[in-house]
Structure formats: C-alpha cells, structure tokens
Length: 352
Length: 132
Picture 1 (tube, rainbow over the protein chains, first blue to last red):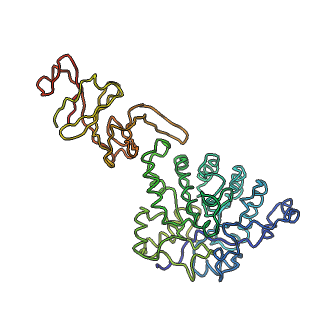
Picture 2: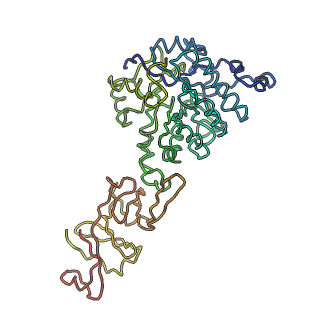
Picture 3: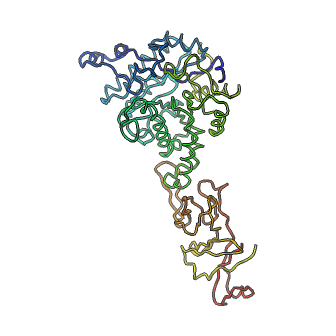
C-alpha cells in the first residue's frame, strides 16, 4: 500500500447525527414542536443503521461530534480539506414539506456544528430531491455560502436520476459550478436490489453497486451530459473496479442501438472520463499493485479518482493508506489534485 | 482495381441491393434513388453480411428529446450486432473516422461502352459497374 501524503483532501466524511433533538434548534417552531407532538423518533437511514458494526468503526464511536472528526480524521491524518457528507435520512421523508424542513435543518446543523468550527471543512447541500422546487430552494438558500462545495443525493431514489423532471436541479448546479454527489444509499422507494427485497443487510450493501451502474446509465442515456456538459457528478462510496466492465458493456451496446439515444454522440466511456469522478473508498480490489495498475489502465484516466477515508464507516483498521502500486504522481492526484480540480470552490489552502 | 459489370441497372431497383462476388471479394451494391454504391459485404466488426441487414434513416440530435431524421434508407445496419454504416461512404455512425466498411466506386455505364468486356451485355441496356 502507498502512504497517504500529508495535505490530502478527504471527500467523504460522515458525522453521525446524534439524534433528532440535535436538529431541533435548526427547525422552524412548527416542525420543532412536531417532534414531541407526533412522537418522532428519528430518521436514521436503513442503508447505514447507526448501530450496525459496519456503519461506525468501534474505536471511533460515536463519531457524532466535531471533536471526533477532528481528532480521529483531520488532525490524525494531516488532512488539508475535508468534505462533510451526512447520511441522516431526513431528505427521504414522504411528506414533502417535512422533508424540506428537516433537510434544511440537517444542512444548518452541518454548517453550525462542523463548518463554523474548522475552516478545513467544506460541506454538501443535501437535497430533498422528491420535490424539485424544494431542491432548488435549498440550493438557492445555501449556495451563497461557498463552504458548500457540492449538492448530494442518494443513488437509489424514487425514479432513475437522469429523468427530465430533475433537470432544473442539474441546470442550476451546472450554472453555479457545483458538482452533484451521488452517495451510496437508498430512499427505500424501491427494493435495494432490482430483483425485490433482499434477506440480509449485507445483500443490500452489495447491491449499492447495481444502483450506481443504473444511475450512471440513466444520466448518460437520458442525455444529462449533452444538455449540461459542464455538470460534474461525483460517485461516493460507489466502489471503483466495477466501472471498466460496466462501461465496456454500456459502450458495446451503444454501438448497436445508439439510434435510440441519438443525443449520445460519443462513447459512454468518454462521457464518464469528462463528467464523472469517484471516491476510491472502497476501491474493491486486492491490495496488489499489479491488479490496481491494471484497473487504472482500464479506467483510461488518472483524473477520475479522489481519495476518501469514508470516516467513520468501518472500511479499514488503523490509518488509511492509498492504493497499492501507484507512484507519487498518481498518489498526489488521487489524494489532492483531482479533488481540487473537481471542486472549484475548494482551495488547497484553508481560507484565512 | 478492375472494373466489373455487376448487373443490369433494371435488376437493382431503387432501395434494392445486389450481392456479387468480384475478384474474390463479396460486395453488396445498393441503389439509393438511382445512385449506386458498393460496400464490402462484410462488417468490420466480426464479418457479418451487411447485405442481410435492415436499412433505416440517419437519426441525429442536437439536444435530448429532439430527433432529426432524414436520408431514409441510406443507413445499413449489420444483422449481427446492429452497427450502423452510411451506405454512401461506408463509415460507421458511432465512430466514422476509425470504423468503416470498405467502399468501392460504383457507376452506371451503357452497354455500348461495355462491349469489350467478357460479361455479355446488350447495347440497349445500362449496367452497374463496380471497381474492385
């Protein structure tokens, strides 16, 4: 494995919301009172159940405060910049008004509890995506704060992400130069697998990869990147090694049926290289230099991958390291340069 | 390249196609509204017989949801994996620069000018001639 250089950018940090009461100060009075009136217990995501061993590494629990994040990740790994990506499930609430209010509260919690405490941190505008107007309103509310460097949705939504009713959101993100992050996880509008409900959490977890494949196919075939060529999409916690094989299949099939989607006038693999970035935690390959380099060769670009610790998910023990076999140039790109190129609002140096 | 008389013009009506073996090569000749074009009858992908594929028009798009459809009948699709080729040039649609099927010059000549050929022609008729 390659040592993580100092001054890295960590693009996927998940502080755990300690409970609904943590969001109460950020809610309008009506919704704050509804927590007691309706006996609301919380909106933890079943994709990342807080008490599941994999969700938070035992030596990092509860991983809910800024001090945890600073001590366990930022300071310990000498990280230059970190992007907060909370996975609390408030944006998934069926009641659209409630989803909008609680998602805004989550974003404000992130702002006050994390961004205001450390200039190294940047954050993601979590979008209440089931109502386009609400999503646009949340972008309009938070985009002026340049510490929000991207917007974020989950991979498994209500319908395939590339559908045109979502385009006003893509148009606005492109206009503002904000990447759209798609994080692993389900809105539970559909089973986590395309076959139906799985028996085990572990099966849902493995199915994240299917969801990323279908989401990527949706964005490409619907023509999102033809319509919004400057839109950057970041896949977070997607895994990486599935991508070349999937692109092979997508591109191969496109050669025969491109007439169905004539707006896609170049190979899907090329579109991915221009518009898609991925975090490389997890990477999903053995710790073997030859294997890693072969995957890099298949990816066909050294600009695609961005390092993430995925703190506090239990992806590794001890301290994080980079992929085996990559030289210092590629290590610097993955650990730092690719993220700085993707996030135009993010500077390597902490703002004064 | 040698000139080969392939068939009387009347034998390949507009929209029709004709396969010929010319100098050891299998070639398919298309009639596009009175103009003749000849392509190797062998897809550059895996050798599928283009002569057995369906034709369609050229569909292009400036923007998702918009379809510009013209040149009906001028795009042949390989029957094996549906790759599209422009009958006029042999160039594929998905990668016109690098992926193409070989095109041969085709023309029409009158029988009177072809009397020297070994192919039996009559002076009253016109013939499709392919250089291959």
